Length: 296
Image (cartoon, rainbow, N blue to C red):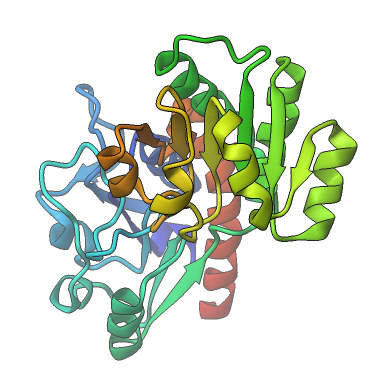
């Protein structure tokens, strides 16, 4: 099977998916799309479907967004007028055996795919792709901080909860901007790396001691680690920025009830959609090439 005989559906997402759709057309595929912001001039060579089921009809491969699925099963599609929740009926319109390439799938999606002979290919945690889109995410987080505070990043007290690929990039950037950075992480190697970079490293158990001094708290772990008890220790002017996939690091409902300003900064890769769209495509195209090789 060749690219010319492959139908790709690009469903949900943000402006990054525009570039991904263009890349798929340039590769020679037939492309159907729905659920991301559609440019006024359209996208040459891409069929703009009436809904998600229409986009998936006859598709060999579906491309869903990197940002995680919500608790109710909806794909990340911040500009779409309705929620896109993949149903068995919707997915059944794909050619079989089918393939879905996405950040990660929830139990509901995995169950549908298993029943319909559709293989999921998850790449949310591919380190190379996280690094490629990392600069855009960091720039997006800086924008969120600047727009939601009345202090400079320089000399501010910032706590980063989590020190994975994106967390470590944020640490290095904030240190370079002159912030007093505190990193809380469970992994001792990550804490040591943060210390070596110039940050103060903490265990998660030490957070209550330091939270009362923080101006900004950034969560990057897709697991709830900051609950009401810890959030109540923060000063009222503190800004909370959660960059993690669902369910996020921060209990955002509790933070709101405590009067703390909170931003769930999902999809920060959209800060530079052409750059990040192309970097995501570099990971997607490897997976599609593997799929086509198996079918040939």
